[in-house]
Amino acid sequence: SAARLFFVTIDLAKQHLPESINCPLTHGMCAGLGFWAVALPFDTVKTLQQTSEKGGDAQARWMQRLANQPTLVWRGWQVAVMRGLPGAGITLWSYTAALDWIQNKKFL
Image 1 (cartoon, rainbow, N blue to C red):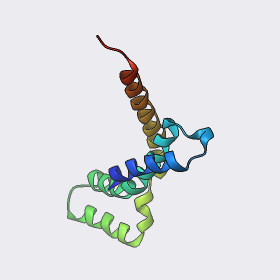
Image 2: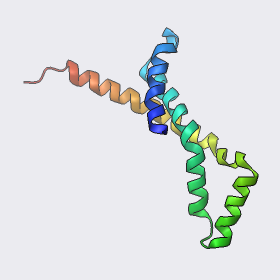
Image 3: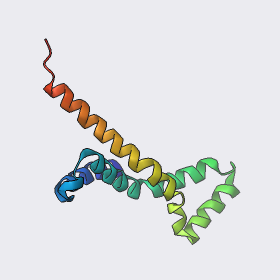
Image 4: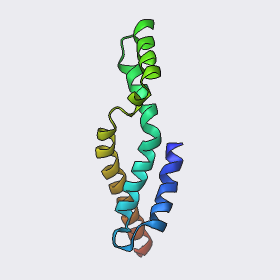
């Protein structure tokens, strides 16, 4: 699943990125790329079905188009990458910073 690949990609990024860019922000961005590589085709099909006209013919036409042009499932990848990678990077960086603060903070 896409969520599983998200966490696997974080671990791979930690192991294989050069030291100069090995930080939670880049780990999260790599994880976002892994997530959207798997999730985007399913998300595209879902969006096409939700936005098509209700009724048998409209949805059948979209499914026929997808069968004839399988590359349509990658439609909108630019938006997913521009939105998903920075969002995943900032999320992981924020989580790491908050966890570090909590673990190093001495509470009464």
